Image (cartoon, rainbow, N blue to C red):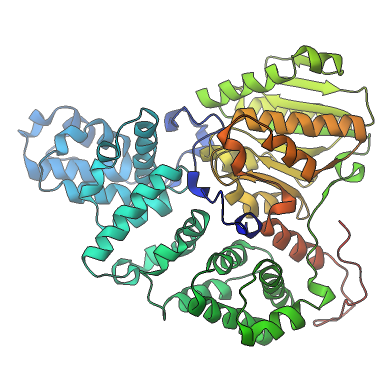
Length: 551
């Protein structure tokens, strides 16, 4: 992500995370069954008996408080059960919490569960979309303490977008300031395990400087060191976060120096060559993108790392025919839409994009099946086939598409996820190792880069958004990409980005292509080096003369 931060503009990342269409708040009830939020699902799978309250089910009590004569103690028990088992009920019956002494406990219990936090964030989204004032939208935060605000951010990260992230974070920092507390004073050990998510969101929103004021200087190196110890060449999540933090500390000379030393120490003392290489590439990304390296550490970053051909970083320029086609010479693309209203609108917009007179004259055809839609063009240098499930046919539509491609002995080369970011994890499960390019069109999709690429080809290229994903931008960018594939048999990222910037939409500023994304650089470089053949029996080998940088 650092590349997109170099100018420190457009860092609205946690516009995180409305949907492809943005205007439709997520309805979890419409979510595919396999995507049910885990905490509730796991609880039910464990078959815990739901305790009765004075012989009554907690749902019945919330529906009819007269069953328990409005007894506050019993009502609190009912609400706390709902917070764990069915948080939507709390939002439905929150009027019963007004002026109740136990309201704080109920709201905080709801935020402590992933499902509950997500519900609250989604309500904020809905209120923002209907132009409710911040005072009304965030009224419930008066019941929260700073630790519960932390829960909202880290549990609800998939659905928090810019305005609501700012509101929650400002509330949290204000409460810390008033009580003269630091984050490390208030967070439990379990919450500290989510610090990586919290710091990443702060980097993405360009709020890392504000957040660091509430983390003692002696604690941040410990936090980063804890993430560094978990770095693995098989999972680059922590590596990406550390890289992003370092590149965000442009105004904090002291802390930047501490982290520079930490990366140097880890690189020099790491015994595993694979992990050593990850630290080497973090240092290389930093050396390439930062102009504020501490004077005493410049020899390490600029010479030891910067002049080492093993850690050369070359931006990805585009995609070639070899990367785009399968053995039949076809560019097969799979586009996945969820089953909600937002996805239906996006699906229609996608189909309409290719039905214009100009597109038809260019050779684009549309076939509609009951399960999926097939848009294709076979008139150019590469035959392009885009197949997308029809909303309402989330799994059977994708299965039908995969069977068609397999029957032709073909492979999916491009994967496109559409709709709300809440569905991104499910969409990802439909991709496979043959995919060389992943377009995550959901809001905040750029944050999924590690998960998306790990799930497919490790050398795949990636496009995502650091803020609001919009159907008009997605479809114009993708249709131009496909035009280039048909006419030229390849495409360049700078041309795709130039087209995206021409869209009359504020959402265009959030899109990040591989040539401007240092997270992509880091992931690609580590994976490419990892895939190089190692000399038999070697654990610390020299690849000085190997060409690792052909893009």
